[in-house]
Length: 117
Image (cartoon, rainbow, N blue to C red; front, side, top):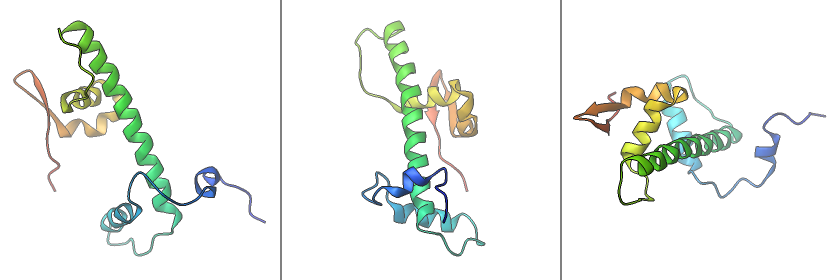
């Protein structure tokens, strides 16, 4: 009999609904390489959970930066995250260094660019 793996908690619950569309994740996985021919049903579920955790962490970091800026620079307190907050979180956090190429500084303003293929 097989023993439960590290991801058994993720896979043991029902398979839907997910925050991110599994068909889209599977399509991205297939486009990533010509060598990828088949993808198991569990792989997109794990990627979906990983993406959710990534988005959650980046949002938390951006929120912390926004609230610090609210206290320091802004007269009116805002409660909406802007792309500049996300870009600042990417720049300020070492874990997100792989995204720094997407973020540029333009006239003392942080701008999020596009990925060039």
